[in-house]
Figure (tube, rainbow, N blue to C red):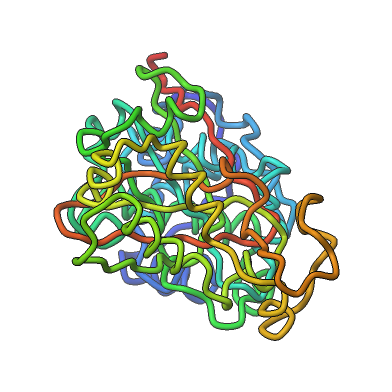
Length: 354
């Protein structure tokens, strides 16, 4: 594969500073310095994918441009990825371009959603993906560079450039980099990927059209039901898309391990917790009418129309509330509202060795 002919334009620069100034001027970056995508670095990234440089990974909106293994590799190098990160990025991009994810709307909306990558499985240990303290934050190469690589592909291939392809009113820091891993050792239930129907030996990546995480701070509750009531209260605030738009897409709850174990110690399975949150993260119809646009056509069919006291759920089914365990010690969890009708999509990560 190292002798494979690449088709990207070749550019020559004198030094690192000149490379970065040229890339900034062309709007090929996220505003931060990039690693120059030299031929050798790009070839190593392609080889790690286990696929040919010209293979199409996906067609990326809103530009509807073809993402080949080669141009994905270029953006991965720019983001600071190592070659072994490439299979995760490829699987995540395939997932994001699945029609169910609605990437065109996610990229072009005024809403501040970003592509959140959730990685689970043996690959998290091999790549040293952070799943503990500060799981959403800085300090870990794999998380930061993979999340950034996704954003650079969305910018440079998909055309999600602010005020052009991306019309987000205020944007979000999550649009720089948004990649976390499951805290599998701290999970009291089956691993997230197993709950989605994959094998325990698989490694997967799931994409969500997530806002920045909304912290759930609860240092008081000591029972499963009281912890879940606090989380449900956070989930039913009026301002996010699941309430004001009522489009019934997927959403995500990321439990800190302490909250997760309190819930499990109360005898509740993940499915029980999903059902509880589905039943309690609701608002009366009259409140939604007063606080945002009324989208009755998206309500589940069993919700009575014309009743101002009818309690409207934020998703269509309990299983649309995905529950993941991530983070370190501390009584904090988070709720990640998603964009409208976007559904999460999961792909198995296929490495060059598999």
